[in-house]
Image 1 (cartoon, rainbow, N blue to C red):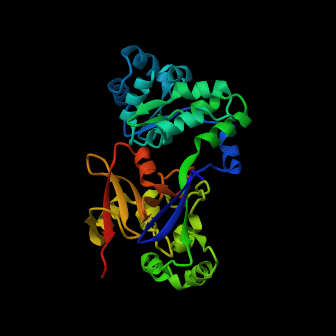
Image 2: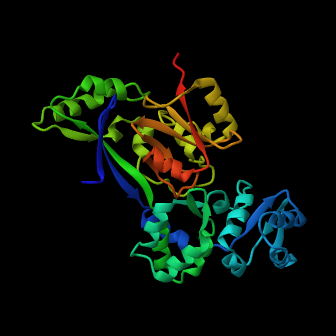
Image 3: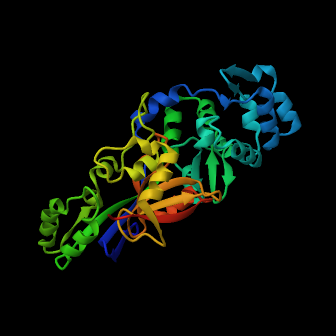
Length: 360
């Protein structure tokens, strides 16, 4: 199978297969029934300040004047809520979308402005070609995506859903857009495999008891041609129980299950929700980790930082070119094993740095 790869290393012999994960229909149906109109909330800003921000980020003078009449603004507490017209959003050119949404990114104005869909170039072509989608819906998607580094992005997700006429077609679009490249990873055990070597690599993780895996490995080694065993069994309980699954939609008081929460709880028996707070996480890294040139031990950390040295994504190194991660704090994203290259394609502007936990 051209989709299967094997690679030997300190981890043993790794058999990997590229897969794509797609959100279950049950999780999608309710949320696509009534897509909300756009409402961008600017905390602590007046309508005049919002107007100036729009003018500074790619909109023409005419567009700003047409979109910033009193009917487009409401105030809730100290925030100004801006409701752009549907036709105005549909009319934006890709380069205007890129500048506008880039300028509003990170302000907390709207979920998809801060957490847009990101598609590496090859994956967007796969989406366009998906036979499940109607040509009209694909044309609409093409109209709404815009370029960003080595990828394209979609911010106007709710608008896309609202313009698709039936719930059935919306569900299909949401499923296709949810496709994520991931990796199925297994350890190959042959009659001549060195189980002690495999043990020394995988058995050093906190809360991993290698003695639990040994009977299965010995059984596979005893077969005439050996066999394979999922890497899932070699992971700590936190990661093992979540791998290849999606979180449920959050309830009030639930932790924000983002990449950092997932990375730094990887080996925890009980998740520590303080990893929701960036300042706590940064402080924890400074106290408990040191910088390394490249990851080589299961449990090493990958941090993706921007040019201002702010950490925007994190993942846990497993073996070879594989990491355990979850993209963003969006419950539409699964926990999965990914290749470094696919992770880099999700964050093309960020550079990875590597850290290892200090030992006592």
